[in-house]
Image: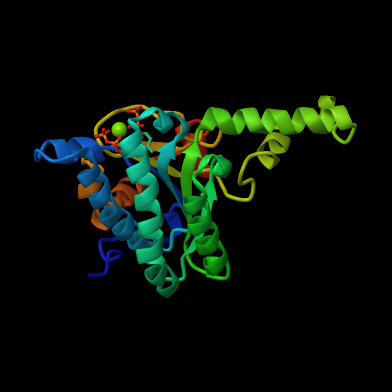
Length: 249
Ligand code: IPE
Ligand code: IPE
Ligand code: MG
């Protein structure tokens, strides 16, 4: 099946889609299973969405896989998730290479166990030359931590005398984020039915179009992503202007 069939407008494609992959635990519990069963099935949704994003020609896909707050979950669940990460990278690497996917990460990588860090670094290195979709995995990530790190870097440069505090602009802030080269998301999707951003990309989503969907993450597929992109293409992004001004552009 070609998922671009359903009248997607090639001139209005999002460059960057970000996803809060939520609902794994509830999906499993509804079937009387352990939460970890939901995380395992979440990998299938990740595979499908990566494929779909590549087929649609989206350039960046940022996936929120583990927040700084998620360290507060039961130890067994955290350990299982870190193990699953290594296993998933191992299993998916061939497919990523075939689809020309470049893997990146965002977050406090140093918080991760060495085995997860090593597996990630290896996958980042191996996929570095790929020319298709860039997938950014957000791990031990939080928007506030990113802002705190940015402020620390800027303060350090100001103290060193290499940055004039009077010259700080939004562009300077942007340049000190974890991935200053990546454009802000056009679309943010949260699965699982909750309508909150849970500390994801706080600076970057200032003008992002938000989509909260009831589907639990393990059930989400590339067709769902395609439907959201179609909906996005019918939204008018005004950036503070009037609708008339936007139409005149
Ligand atoms: C998202 O699913 C995955 C992670 C946060 C790691 P959850 O595990 O949060 O699932 P729910 O929200 O409890 O159903
Ligand atoms: C957000 O989901 C983080 C990820 C999907 C990785 P959570 O399940 O942790 O969010 P809250 O706690 O319900 O806000
Ligand atoms: Mg959740």
